[in-house]
Length: 222
Ligand code: CA
Image (cartoon, rainbow, N blue to C red; front, side, top):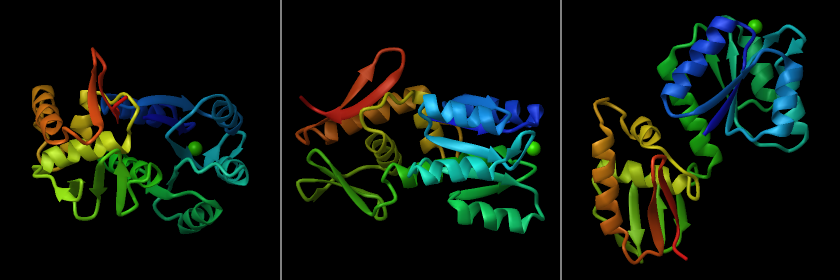
């Protein structure tokens, strides 16, 4: 997952970037509307964190630019606590969510995860990949209409990999994505979950490949 941060407060910009990088994201920071538009024209991002007050214009221009071109990349705007009108305008222009300053890092992560889930298709109640069907509301996976016996952690890992199929997902990303309540999940634990999931999805036409030194990739076999 790659995030573009558009923020002219250097301290806040690097704090958010460092926090997201620690969480397994790739992250780039720009501090002007023009730089944001340039970055978006030459690179792919999975989400944007967008400050509204920027030195060469306002963040609305970035939202307008994207939506006029039909680009659905999720946008999280940053606003002041009392700036209701800013939030309304941002959302009406096509921003997906907002975060109130001062930014609480866990909330930044949570909102980005939610936005990315929505845009990667996990917002749909059920989706199919190979012979697997994932019910994201019931948190159940089915193989040829038979429910798979997955622990909640196994479900979370499988859901994350399936939602990001054909992309390399690091163990750190899986830890971030699956360690909701207790945070003491290790890379070894992730390996163990993946091992068990592999056994359970055998015959589905879906494989979870190990990408040495980088993580895992879920894809259709062959
Ligand atoms: Ca600003």
